[in-house]
Length: 194
Image (tube, rainbow, N blue to C red; front, side, top):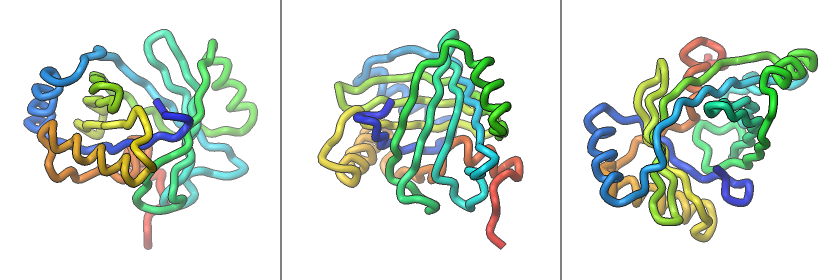
């Protein structure tokens, strides 16, 4: 969920113990919004392959959330860098994801990967949305996203890191590229350095 179409978040791979500790702390200080299954299918246009670069800066996906489907586009900054600070995010609800997939296929969009995860969401005040994710083929992650602007991207990221310490992750080793990138890398779809 982006604030004014700009998303600022951190994603932290964690072990099972850290995952459990963070959940215990969140239960005490945040509102539990429930558990859901997510399925996000990523596409690239043939005329400008998003994964041609070593560090892709754009993603287009159809996100399935139960009976709801969303077309989502993200453009990450800084572009073509190993580590991104934020992204532009635009999305709209889709009434027929199957029809949209047909349209994308006709327009020469190629399916890349589907990220499957179980997500438990907590909201802390009006400041952060925290997702505890178990991602198929990748493991456990804690994602903390800002629900408001704290005075620019840099200050907002600092607040996210400070909050991670409050829930038991004092020195987060952040995932730099996100689930689709890591899954594509694992499957050999991302250009690797020579």
